[in-house]
Amino acid sequence: MTQLVYGTLGYDAAHMLGGLMLLLSFTLLSQRRMTALIDIYALQATCLALAAFWQGHVQSAPALYLTGAIAFAAKAVLIPAALRRLMLRLQLTETMEPALGIFASMALGVGLVVLSIMVVLPVTMQSQALTREDLALALSVVLLGLLMMISRRSAFAQVIGFMSLENGLILAAIGVAGMPLVVELSLAVLILVAFVVFGAFLRRMDRQFHSLDTTNLDRVGGQHR
Amino acid sequence: MSALLALAALLLHLALMLASAPLLLGVVRSAKARMVGRQGPPLLQPWRDLLRLLHKQPVVADSVSLVFRAAPALCCAAMLAAITLVPSFTLGMATAQASDLLVLAGLLALGRAALVLAGMDTGTAFGGIGASREMLFAVFAEPALLLVVFTLALMTGTTNLDAVITTIASGQLGLRISMALALVSLAIVALAECGRVPVDNPATHLELTMVHEAMVLEYSGRHLALIEAAACLRLLIWFSLLAGIFAPFGIAPKADGQGPILLLLWAAGAAIWAVKMLVLALGLAAFETSRAKLRVFRVPELLGMALLLGLLAAILLFVSQGFAHGFGGDGA
Image (tube, rainbow over all chains, first blue to last red):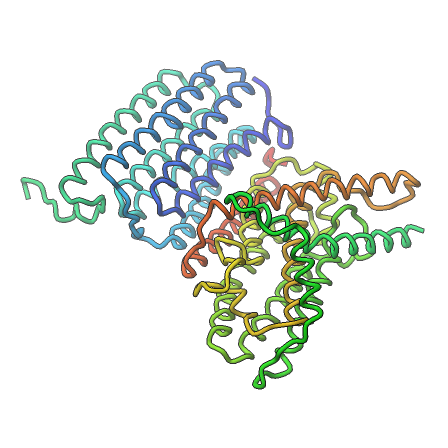
């Protein structure tokens, strides 16, 4: 495996793609409109696919090309298309105010990025530079996805947050050499299954409440309450 | 000899900037009109407007003080001073020593403050609204600009714009995430500072949400000409700044005994600079036609995003450099 050195093209391109994904995570946090959320999510998945291709090229690991192809097909094309159809079907036009203000959630996001850098960099002192920085970026994307899930009231935005969280997981996985293909494939299948569940959930919720506001769910107690 | 060349470069730069500033605005307007299917004004229309306004006598309200009369000149002077600091086709102009990014930020702020004071001086409600909104935006835009300056200073070790561009153009920094974050941040700040579409609409006098036009509503004649000229110059300053920092290729190096080949370098630098300006102008026009103006109270959110991205850029550098040096990692 080629060593990636700070300041070379291999390092720079991988670093840049990771950084771009982080930037898109922040853009997701700042958006209210659903079409914009879907577009940015698709763009982030495209970046992920490019990052996987690049890592496959640099690490000369053909399996990563497969990962990239799956990421592109499933997350940059299929899932956004399905989300758009769902949006049309349910006629979702409402833009919901997030539970936490946009500026507050962005500020929290910056804090999370700092946190993940402070956590990852000292822990991975022995690894090469690319892995360390990539891991820090991936952890940031994961945490920003989580933040999006808790800072939004719209179930739709929460789904997007979850999906972008998973992008971060894959980014972490491709940065580390020797991730078994089985794990990645099962993760990809898992995300598709999760998406089907989400679709059913959103539809059900829309029928029940005529809105995707998750505060409605507070009133749902279940049978055993 | 090299001092003379630096002076010549500065004069050429100034002439080029002054000639092209209204033209740039004309290109943006014309491209915008074409993109929505109208023919649009001719490219030289801003020049003609300026000349027309210069011939007209200004009408000044009885109630205004000296501030109102002095503000257009002050604003235009600040922009003129700023334009000498931002390199266009060559580095190492006579003002290179003074071209500090903080000075530039200060001059831009001075121009803004002059117009805000003038807007309030007239005592009309509209001017006051415009002034207060302008300050509301400045509260976010200026710290964002300073954070980007801080980021650049961390990477290049100086706040001197000439030296910053020299370092970036040499390519020793490589691609950096912080640069990408700083670019997005600075682009948003530029949109706000120039009063372009998501923040302000430069093409209207009627909207209740307008900012810049509301401040200068009472101006006429040569006062208005100065203000319009300052607006053109501000757009050119920001374009040149963005192109210089983030796409520094093709810019001629400092004149230092290259002989006659220097002229060739300058000509090439000017041509490449013109292409960059054209690309930015078309990009701005495309962006503006595809966007709606934000509500005024959403603008601080956009500028807050610029602020946080600037902060993130600085933090990423700070933290990763701290680890690279402090813990002997293999980062640098």
